[in-house]
Image 1 (cartoon, protein in one colour):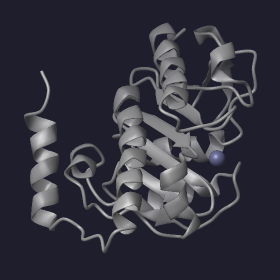
Image 2 (spheres, helix red, strand yellow):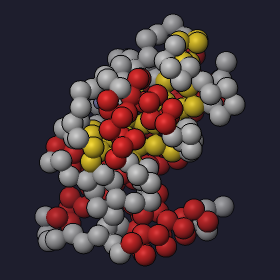
Image 3 (cartoon, helix red, strand yellow):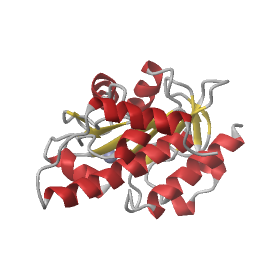
Image 4 (cartoon, protein in one colour):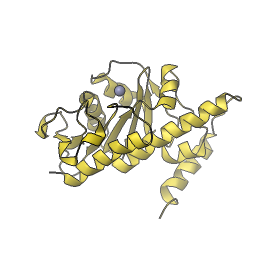
Length: 213
Ligand SMILES: [Zn+2]
């Protein structure tokens, strides 16, 4: 079942590696099928390049396994909490991408100081307080802090990126890391200033309504 979504989820997981957002077996990707409400999630603790689409685990929104032999990601309950509480989202991606996580270690969000972050993440990236990995509380904290952003940092841990589909979730994860890297470089030379809200809104609208084919 959900063969197309399984392929999209695995392709996104492989893209996390290509874009250097995870190492070894880190991170995970979850996509929700809008019709059935079932979620496809990457299995726990196996390198993505060793997996095929049929290894993806199908679960319902409460985490009951519907199809699949493998154990789903250990973060599943937190990821499903986000999707259960945000009907507008259909993808959650978790990474430990190094530049964004360096902000998270300092308990700092990423200010929206770049047009590209405004375009694709839509806002500042907030930092949610530390909670233990593998529990639903990660999801609770993300829902409380993410606001209208498509990414949220997890203090002392990593990044949650979200999207209306798997493609948009992946773009948010990649752009969050890219912006964190550029901001890190800028911070070595001076003080970073956030874009005015009016310009953030303009750049977001431009991306949503004009950019692309
Ligand atoms: Zn993690």
